[in-house]
Image 1 (spheres, one colour):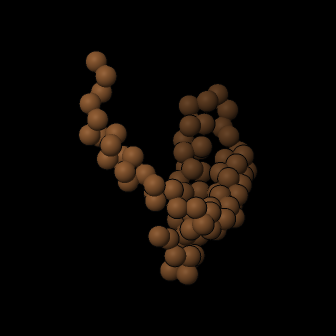
Image 2 (image 1 turned 90 degrees about the vertical axis):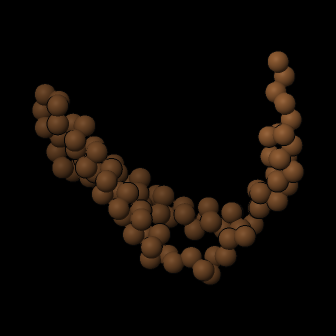
Length: 88
């Protein structure tokens, strides 16, 4: 079970920051073969906005993960699905 007090939120923010920096590089690299260069504002603003939105949603998603355990009833279902032969 996930414990919210054990989560290092600085690491979560750092992970989203690294993802955002990677996406800025990807957006800029994808625009290089184009006819005109993409301005840095355009290349940075989109990924920065997406990274910020997901950074703000992450605590809520983690809270939902602690509240609703999706693996509690699946153990028997997964075992029976793997052990049951597939129809021919």
